[in-house]
Image (cartoon, rainbow, N blue to C red; front, side, top):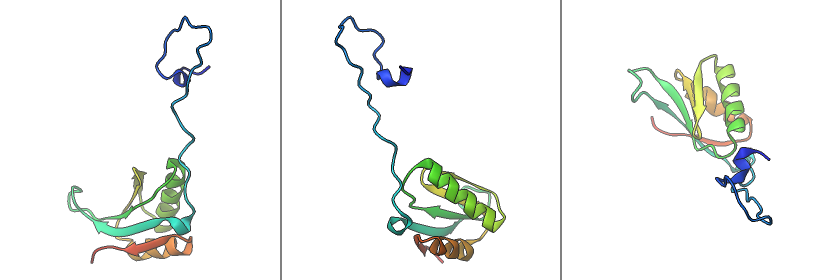
Length: 112
């Protein structure tokens, strides 16, 4: 049995004790049509550098990373993805918005 599955129980003298797993199944990612993504330009806390910020992603981290990789590859820029946000270095709002709509996501541009 994996150590994580014991939920903090180290030892029990009860022969009928059953370990309970507190973790549920992984977060299921809703289909793209149910995602409400927002695309905006951001330069706060970045030394004046502009990044395109995609927020509102709900689902598994692996799916977020896959979407981020697709966007970074198509835009030819670096970036990161964590906590439901994707950062792509540079001003690629229009291109990312078009890519997301083409992939079936509900996306809209926020800000000027």
